[in-house]
Amino acid sequence: MEIRNRIYSNIMYVSLCGELDEHNAPYVKTNLDDLFSENGFGQVIIDLSELDFMDSTGVGVMIGRYKKLKERHIPIYICNPSKHAEKIFNMTGLYSIMPKIS
Image 1 (cartoon, rainbow, N blue to C red):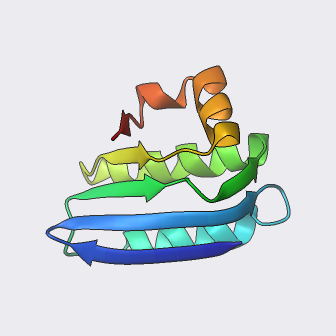
Image 2: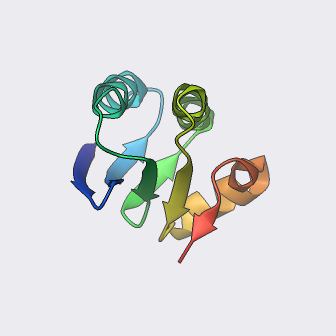
């Protein structure tokens, strides 16, 4: 699992690459929590174009990060979901709390 990020114009861009499953969830959770604890951004855009797989543990990781950012009034948006990510987000209703943008 690889996590890339940058902040540009008050937006934190994060790319998740690989598999977000039970094995990688602790790594992703810790790294995203560290990134999101920084200041200097008012919204987060997560690029899922390189997310090959996500299971229910990954869904939990995403919901947990959403809740942490919601406390700070920082919205999360999803862009470029892979076919697998698109299916999971539609099936679970995650787009209702993390809208997909173009």
